[in-house]
Image (tube, rainbow, N blue to C red):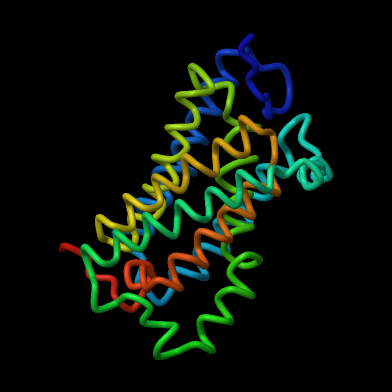
Length: 227
């Protein structure tokens, strides 16, 4: 049964609520990332992402039925074998990816800036993976899930939107990598109903990618817009 999360105040028809929710969805997941990609100076991208996260947290807060404490209930149910398998696949795929496309960048941080790499492993889970997962998993599925025709398509669409949000880096590898990761994280969250697992997988993927050298495609200093 289709469930639309109503947020309008007062007596509003279900169709009106649906259209308002669709407009909100398009603005948040398409218009704002596109504006950031084409108009935002690279130096302001991270402050803009912080504001984007705050807005998303507010929308999640006003979503009927959402409870923040529900986000931590899945920790005891994490399938560590699955997470470990995901990490191994990520290492193998990322190694092949970097050696094929940018072999000179392989292990560049580990070789030249091990202190920076250590900081990434410590801070990336809290200041990048967690906020992104909050916006692209609970907000997407709990607030806008009723707009999707099916859970399977919702997971694929979620991965596509997660990739689109990384358009600001203006390179194809970043879009390919984030689509694959987005689908995996969405599957962990929606199919397994496990937000901690999604955050953990995202944190591991980020650490692995930066360790192997794929961070060259996610560095704002390398952004070159095609116009």
